[in-house]
Figure 1: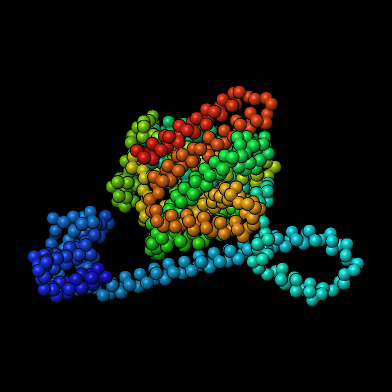
Figure 2: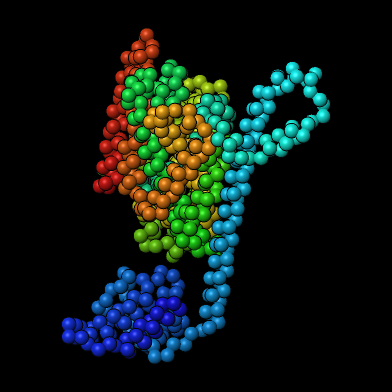
Length: 597
């Protein structure tokens, strides 16, 4: 309706053509009449639809035999054959317009209600976060004051005084002066994660964003070499996580900065944390773009058409912001368990659709899939491999990326030892490998050579089982974000402490929370501006991801053996050097596949 109103205004304006001036008198016929036709064409033309409504000549005429429809073959606008309408009289079905207005208004109300609900939940979560933090602070104060109170019981009246009552009520009130006094350091999170919490957190850190791109890698690589590469990278990443635990045990340092200072030198100790900051910002940016795109395409299925920017802002406000303020990984166990359930459900739906033939030729949803994403499953695809396989290598090289939190995982694991870390890591990554294998096979067996880089984009929007999987994966990526963000915040604080005169200032929770909000705002702004972050994230993941997975842990472990141990195992050191070299090769290969494949 808006487009047609603009067309009528343009027609009225063209009838009031101004007098020709001497400078452009010859151009008045062109810019007086043709702009109206061009603008009307732009306002009324659409790309050729792919649904059943393609028989209609326009959105104004419900009749597909409109005699006033004149094809314009000389102008190709919006990648389709445009149709210029020369209706003298347009009859509009007002009942349909009213229905559309009501549907649009109802959708707007639902969107506004959702946004308000998320805003209220965000405020409630922030209030509970501050209240819980203040409660812990007062419990610590009461515990420290209890011995002195016991000694003074004989001289204190049993009835509370007015001053004590006033003090009690004041202590129950959150004020800025009290918040400023609260501190949090990495020692406060020591041994707070059970093995189960460790496994679900690491799984949520890996699987939701890692599994969706792997089926497309099989389009250039056969099943046998693809599965073999997956198992090889699984083994290497488990071992490199084990080296982080061994380095922590040998040096006694609890983070990358301390370990680098002890083994290589304090002057360059900023290098590993700077790498962590870069890789975490890149991946957090990818996560934000990812869930914004998912909900932008998904919300119309629930009757709420939301712009991508509004989807990003709404779900960043809640639940992302409150989760990003949490300091310990153990506090994220419930949301990580939800991510586990959502990924398992998604794998089940993909296997179901691969078996029931819904997307095969003649299937229920075959007609809903665009031609570029239509199933094209080869009959023999076991051993194919080539230069194009570098894309799968790059995806698998960072499919187990959780090493930026390696020191944090080790610190927070109950009764942590390197062997205990090895077992928990092998379990978490092993579950991820199992689901990677299932989703890779199911996705490729459904769509074959036309698998999208995000496999859920291949499925129909009318498939409600898949829509629920999209919803679950979108929320899973949101709850995976705080795990990555936790590593970003700790690395950023480590860098800021190096440039600060008083390092203890950055132990204050208030300052850490302000830093968290600033980092989250920065990432959100970048996600709003950069709708396509493929190349940037690919390069960051290839260079910094390979560095933090293979180069930094293996180099630190080898240096700690040579610095602190009297007996040097030359075989172990040689293997660590080879893994470091492999990390360099993977970084170069990842850059090549990102830029040229």
